[in-house]
Image (cartoon, rainbow, N blue to C red; front, side):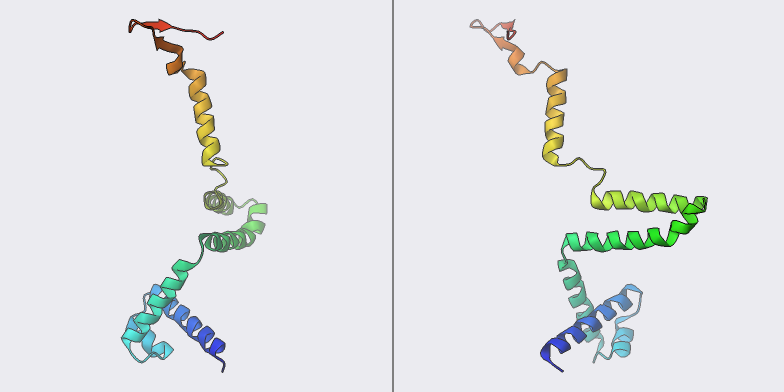
Length: 145
């Protein structure tokens, strides 16, 4: 077995350990089931899998979640077409989750949102340039022609 094959096998076993731990299996049981020498070996495997999982780019995680939502939609689709009210409700929740996940309901960009807010403020309020103090410290309304 090559070094690469050993690393792949070790990584797969670490992921199995993480899945078992997430399912509530104790470290001792994980060690026994997956062949780790001790409880601490199973613990290190779970920690390693967690670290690698956390390093996964957010975009890749979003893509994975979107694919899962696609599979759930596909599984429901026939029932939705048949008019099943519960399936339609579930589909709407899936679509709401997809919109949050992919930012479909958010402004196109923060910059665009900020510019739109500034335009709204300018239209509603005259702003500080509309009134400027004269030489005596009094406020005098000025208008631009």
